[in-house]
Image (cartoon, rainbow, N blue to C red; front, side, top):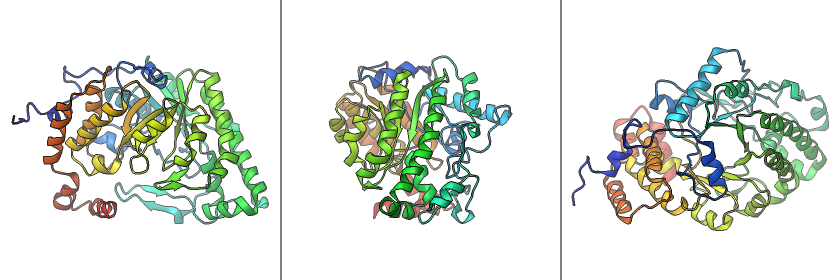
Length: 434
């Protein structure tokens, strides 16, 4: 049978959200709570960071509470004032975007700077896609490499933490929606304060100094998390701390076991004592510490990046002990594939990982500015259309999606042929494929 555009499942993937055949957006935080219990809610929940640039492609406004917002290496989100109308507008835009694209939450973060306002201009570069400034971590020697620098450092106190974003979100989030309060970075703040190389040497040469930094950072982070949990609108904590790169851990497992995981356990217990969820965001291949992470009793693991981990294998390893997020690759299909490629991968994940709960669908990390609106919508609309429980995706639907993906033009073809203003995407594709 010849598949015409009108009958194509791809054409359905790109329909407007107002189409009467699509379920109408309605935030429901219980959807996420239910799937974390490995029970089946009404449909598979969505979980993603969506950058302001991509939001602007999809609407005429953008939020941005879940990513960036001028974040420094210390985790500061700029001096936010609850009374500022731009902050309220930004959060309202984020809420509107999230609801219209079938999410059940927004992210919101407090403002705190562990770097004492220090900015190293040599570490600031222009983003290759947007041209906006981006600050990088110091891989060599940072602000604190001695006891003298530790004692003289202007450490933030609980009174220095600004919760304007949480205060504003508390007023604005509608019934059914929750806030995921974002703060972690215990390991990350420690090594960034020291610089990666200095931190690595100090593990053996200055272990007591390393211990002191972990204690100092963790004390404030845990205090922040306690405050976040006081907000009625907060349904979960997103604890961010990247432990790996694409092929392994940044540090030997003993480093995390000695200095990070005991502090994370405190954070998990704080959440569970308040009947709230603990979401752990960690990039990279963390296969060596799966047992440790499961032993911490975290609720959600975000994300499962397909460039580092096989989500089907992770599902077998974790075996119902923590819910998984992801894992549609940012590179292919989201950036370099077609909407049909995205559609196909979404269907496969719903079929293979969705049944029995314990799964939140999204990208393998985040949805960035360089994605096309069509590819993003293909992921979201497919998840909403086919992610309803009980999940039953016929083989015929998969075969049709495979055929459409096979004959569809890829985004990297457009990069070479029709997008000369974005040569960096072509260079990135060359590196990715070699």
